Image 1: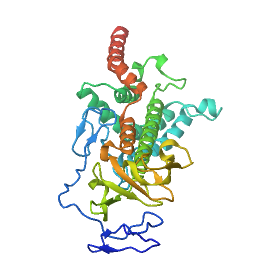
Image 2 (image 1 turned 180 degrees about the vertical axis):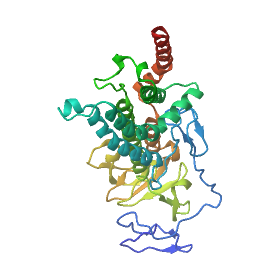
Image 3 (image 1 turned 180 degrees about the horizontal axis):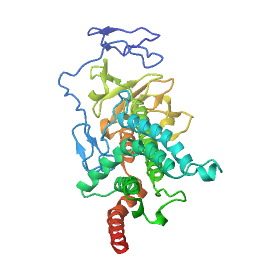
Length: 373
């Protein structure tokens, strides 16, 4: 960061170091090369975790072994947001499923919606089967894989309920259609419509799938927006800072090279690089990113400043007190990230209920089937 100032300035060490006579520029300009730390270790790419099961941690992207959901990075960086393949996939499945489910609902409710022109009997059954089958077998496939993963992991959850409900409704309908074709007399009259065709639940399976996909799309979009908010918070901190060396020279360094106790010069219009205490100078600092208050706060020697806030028209010399993960901005980012990965209380309740509700429903259904037979 070179200083494009209004007064005279002197430089040496190939233009990296500037004397105190350098006049501050109007903003955080970036011109001169930065001082590199040859001993600095590369930053690891981070770990990935499941949004529903934070205890699952992996070294790279993949799927959760418990529920099958796509893993997300635990630490979000300032890099540009990349495409979310899970969101794209769920969105595509939702729109295609919705396009097939809407005419299916119109067919199933034709008698109420279009009096005198409704389709009934076997034409309705075949039309419903043709529209619902791709929705169930393709649109609901992620729910089946995640439901099966929850069974194998012995961790029943909402995906177990979805897979069971959609699968049973579709399989029952297919079975009753097959029986109606091979042995129609085996279907009791109460399980037929007024045209003699068997009662099916293709539309229920398709509609449940479409609504569940809509819920997944909304959840993934909300999580993606939260990730964007975290990136915006991270970008509040500048990438470099101007450090005052013991000999009085000033050098531009990367933020990772700042340690507690370093003296930093904050010029007009620049963002404060780290949390610190004002040693010299005076200015008004915009702290709206923390407080929401639009009126800048006057800062004088002894006052505290927060990394990410915007300096006004004065120049400040700040002693770094909290850097890296200890800064206020880093703590805010960490709390937002933890809130993003945490499950809503109602979701935890649903998962706990599912652990008992699903087996109970299966047992009751089997008992009912055996007693009815």
